[in-house]
Image (cartoon, rainbow, N blue to C red; front, side, top):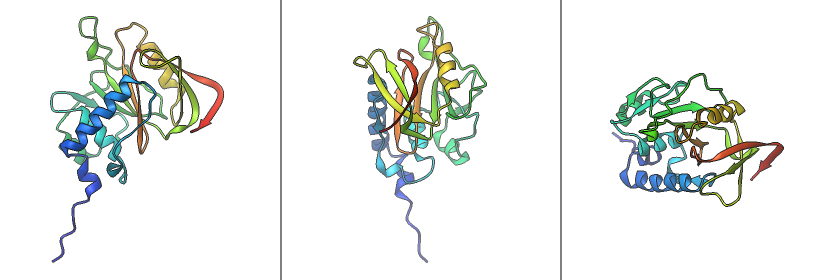
Length: 198
């Protein structure tokens, strides 16, 4: 009887060394908003592996996750051991970037602004599409990044949610291979009439 080997790309997501490297990359993305981070290539060969890696790296049994667009597989919920919650109360929200938000996330409080949600958005492609202009801490002058599959409604809502700093939300955008982070301290707008292919 032949036993098929366990698929390395999927199993790599759950390895501590892989998660540690991904954590450093995600922290670098937040320190330098708009900088492209290509997470480990061994996890990119299967659908949803990048989302798996982001969630496995950032969440645990002590936090809550909302998945209004059902992007997380049932098997992944079991492995993550995190708690499901409504988008209005969750610490992390996974959603589609091409679908406008119909909820208001947790924004934290003046006493605990860190309790604002982190919104993790699946977009079509980072590096091609509409030009997004970013300014703020961690950016020299301005940073322009192209992105497709992100409806402007997300940026409009983000501006509304982050209007009473330090309250607000942080964002992570991801495609099949790369991520960028947009902390609440970053100002962002679409560069009208411009699209890039990077």
